[in-house]
Length: 269
Image (cartoon, rainbow, N blue to C red; front, side):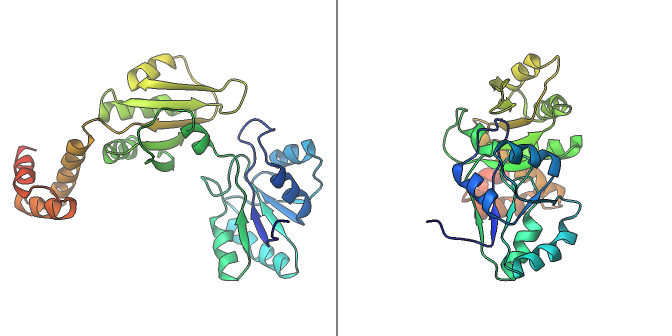
């Protein structure tokens, strides 16, 4: 028999309504209250599995004001489950505020394993090694996207984006990184699921007439990532006013590089 907790973070399907665990259904039926982003969205799931538990809205605009209510309910002995509209709570969804307060106040918290667009996506695309950086929803402005494109040259970087903005985002990345390799997934677990990998120019061309559905994308690290990463760090330090000799000392010390090689590279940039 599973241990009982005061508060449960419960993943819900990201598309296919059948992608929910037996334990998740059991918990949602057993708790006294379900906190959810949109009660209408969650109610569809609950109706499908004949779950009668009461729902209350909990989203990024009312996180703070709901805290006292939840604490009061828990102090009275009630159990609460937190869900997002789709996927795992706190992975680009609300939850951080209440979890912090629960821990401070000594309540027991657990998270159930389950659906997440990030792990689903990464489980079906080719990758070398296990490392990746997840940044959530990519920023909107060209300057911010450009900064991310240059910053993560040496890492596989994964992000979410909207179908309305993704092609613009890809063109900004292409402008800063060249014809880099990417993987793009849409509508994961749904009827029209599609995952494409290839050069960024190929992906832009493939979706040139538009794209629909929820988007998750990964930009692969460059093959010669270390050199480009060093160049990026040198330029960053130069922009802060550091001189070539200072830069060579800083980077050779922090990254275990040859000081003379860094100095030479800094002079050339």
